[in-house]
Length: 99
Image 1 (cartoon, helix red, strand yellow):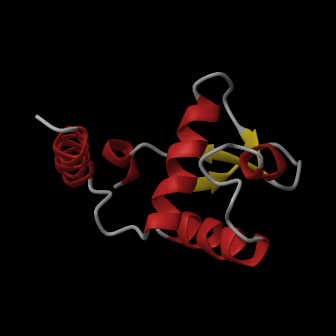
Image 2: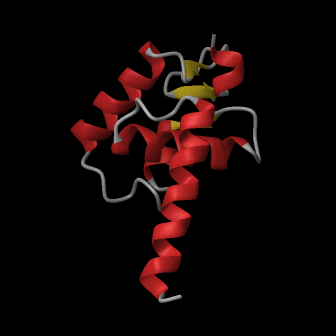
């Protein structure tokens, strides 16, 4: 099996997992931001946008695109503002708990 074939298999597996979790309707940018947020929130309860912007999955996304996608993820229920009074802090809502 060639390297590209292995990569194609991984991509198909990822697509299947995204569909199972209900992530297939998110744009590529929204998915990358959501994945990065999940990665950060594994080590802490909430996260700041500034830390999220530095994550390797979203480091190449322009600032306006980042904030549009972040707003969209909040509207869709994948992220929510933190209960703390701090601005720019969010909490991940896992797809199974989203509805």
